[in-house]
Length: 296
Image 1: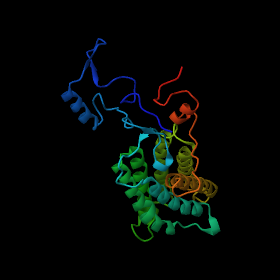
Image 2: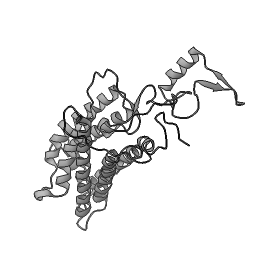
Image 3: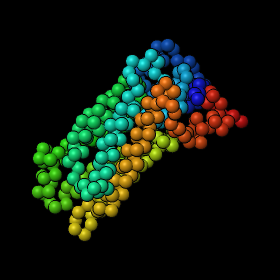
């Protein structure tokens, strides 16, 4: 299930050595190596691209831990796994908004979502992102904290009678709010696409979550920017965005359950299906050994 790293870094080079410009290398002194490690924390120096999953046993990508690649298990963890909490907060809020966007039971106003977005999708998911940072998961911290911020900003924009953002823009022109809200959603489409790229070597369940979410942002953004003949958001496109939001919500719940369920509390373990080109998939097909080395 896990692989041992064959090097401390993401590449094949030994970054604890310096070159003199002509191909020869010398070992760094202890003081130089310590200084390089300190510099790497700020993104520069010869150790700036050190593999954060190195050192000890590495585990395969897993959406239940919000890890898109090989990662180190947290030794003597003082925090519980925050990923299922963040995923659940995201899933419920997205589920409700997706139903409203699809016009379920004739619903059209997102006012109810504002409360959920403030309390669960926003605050709780943001806290889960901070806890991901505490356990050293950069991807999880970035994604959960960002989407927590998304739901908080979404709630601020649409709070009825609160911040009057929608009313202020409608006072500028009849379409100003739709244009700006559409651009806002397109910005989140771009951000989510960046995260999609980071899940291409993970699992089908993890990739599907971000892929469907990205399509939801894209379609909702287009729905607000490409309006109907009445100048209102394009209903069919908004409904399509709501459909993909529902898919993203259920996939988030699936990943959350995968992170909670184990053989101590469940009669079954959810499959997450590693891509054939992922490290776990290549190991299963005999392309690499348990140390991550290619097999001839």
